[in-house]
Amino acid sequence: MIRLRDIEMRYGEVRALTLPALDLEAGERLGVRGRNGSGKSTLLRILAGLLKPTTGTVAGLLPPGQAVLLHQRPYLFRGTAQENVAFALKVAGRPVAEAVGWLERLGAGHLAGRAARDLSGGERRRVAIARALAVRPTLLLLDEPFAALDAPGAEALADLLEAFEGTWVLAGPDLHGAMITRAIEL
Image (tube, rainbow, N blue to C red):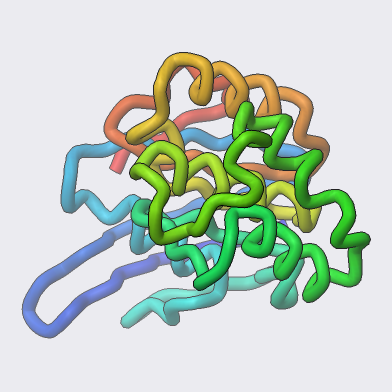
């Protein structure tokens, strides 16, 4: 699916990522573990096609819309939680009526009518996860998705990841027992 070779990403004099090789296969569940500043977020941005590495080659990136990156600090649009998920569904050409159902899968159905700006960190994360999953991407890239989630939210996310039919990459300092098929350390 995606092949990375001799990757290095620099921001000026700072080396953010060095990765000799990575092959990501269809259907794989890859865990990327590492301390803060090890390059996990940078790797996810490269896999999403948002960053071009300073050196190295990247082949097989998916077209926009097929790869979805859930950022470490997800951004929500103005409007309600439901409108955030509905917008993503509309852009993906999927029925916007599915928005509340996706929120409910994450135990966030009660947030549907609340303004995004009024949500707590964990609530914002649940809405962002629902939005990412709702478009049914081929590749789901998750940057510390369990951060700020309470136990029910973490359990709901773990269940959804287990049922996810595409490929996913989960990055974080701790992989939280996620059902990964392979792990790498940065």
